[in-house]
Amino acid sequence: RYLYNLMDQVLVKSESSSLRRAILEEVGAKDLLSEVWDLKEVGFSLVAKGVDPTKKDLFLEVVDREIRRMVEEGLDHAL
Image 1: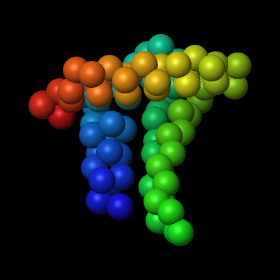
Image 2: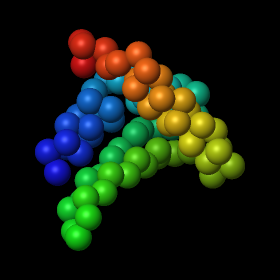
Image 3: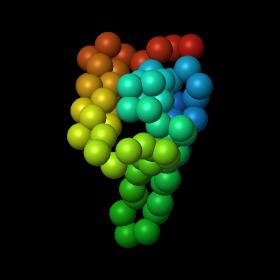
Image 4: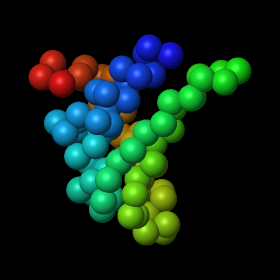
């Protein structure tokens, strides 16, 4: 659960997160929220508020691209 809370802080809540910026700018989200839950399995979800439902594929593409970029290039240490 600690790892998911860390992901939440670094990927979603940080104003300098490239994932957050990309979703707000490219997808046109008004805000980006996340939820971590711990039932039988730990889960993590992203919610882009105020996005036209027809932009679902763009949202998924941006998330995939940014996560892959972070894995390949590493995280910005300023986060």
